[in-house]
Each structure stands twice: as structure tokens, then as C-alpha cells.
Amino acid sequence: MDEQDDKSTKAELKLCGDIAVKRKNYRGASAFYSEAIELDASDATLYANRSLCYLQMTEADKALRDANTCIKLRPEWLKGYYRKGAALMSLKEYKEARDAFEAGLKLDPANTEMEKVFQEAVEAMKKDDLPEKQKMLQAVQLEKNRHARGAAATPAELLQQRTWAIVLSQPPLASLWEFTEFPVLYTIFRKRTL
Image (tube, rainbow, N blue to C red; front, side, top):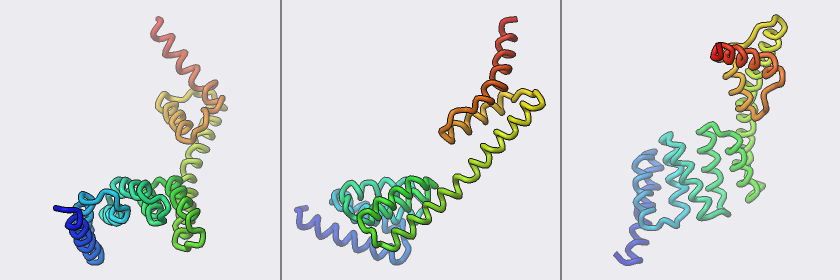
């Protein structure tokens, strides 16, 4: 095939993909877009369209990969950031989704749809963050109660406390170390040396 035939075939494949999307045949559409990408891997539109298909097929990882490729090929195009944000929302990566939508808003501050999804990502971040903070506060309160009655935490509880500390990117509280880990570690050490 010569270059003119490739362009013609790519246009036909893209058209078939577009028709399949209108019919909500996302698997078929993604196959057409994939074939077109094989002919021209530098067309950002094909990646954006296939990203939409992957999102509709609940294959968010693939949708994100295509959105990132779209942005790499055409960083000034709003649609790539929209697709990236949508894929990240589907993956429940709300902070990264917010960042993608924000990058899109920087390109077109007056875009109401991008503003709307940006706000949705911000709200999702707030809702997602709330349960973790509540669990951490419960763990701290449990530890205070345990310390007040002189009881040590179990190894499983220590692991859970450390995990929450890592998840929240905060160092473990001094009281957790001083009043729970040291007696447990000391007991384990004593048993091994006896």
C-alpha cells in the first residue's frame, strides 16, 4: 500500500469506528480504531476515541493509557485531559482525576463541562478521604482507651495502625510507639532469649 491508500483506509476505519460508537458497539469501535492506529500511530483523535470505548467497556486502565498517549501527541487538546480524568475517576484515583481536569481547565477556563467534572472530582476526593480519617481517629481513640487501662495492642492491631499511618502519609503517633510497640517487641525479644 502507498501512503495515499493508508490515509484512505485510516479514514474509512475511523468512520466505521464512529458509526459503531453511535450504535453503542464499543468493542467493535475499539477494533476499528486499533486498526486505524496501526496505520497512523500519530493521530491523537484515534487514541481519544478508543479511550472512550475502553471507558464504556469498563477497561479503565486501557482508557488511561490511550488518554495519556493522546495528551503526549497533542498536549494542547482538551479532549485528552477529559478522557484521562474520566479514566482516573473510574479507577477511583480522584486526586489525579482532579489534576487532569484542572490541566484541561488551564487550556480552556471557560469550558463548563470541564469545570463540572473538575468539581465532581473534588467532591469525590472529599467523600473518599472522610472514611479514612474517621478510621484513623477511631484507631487513635482505641489506643488512648487501651493506654488508659494499661493494655497492650495485639500485633495485628499494630500492623493496622502502621498501615493507616502509612496510608495517611503521617508518621505513627508517639503514643502508639511508646505504649504498644515497645512492650510487644520486648516480650517477643525476651521469649527468644530465654
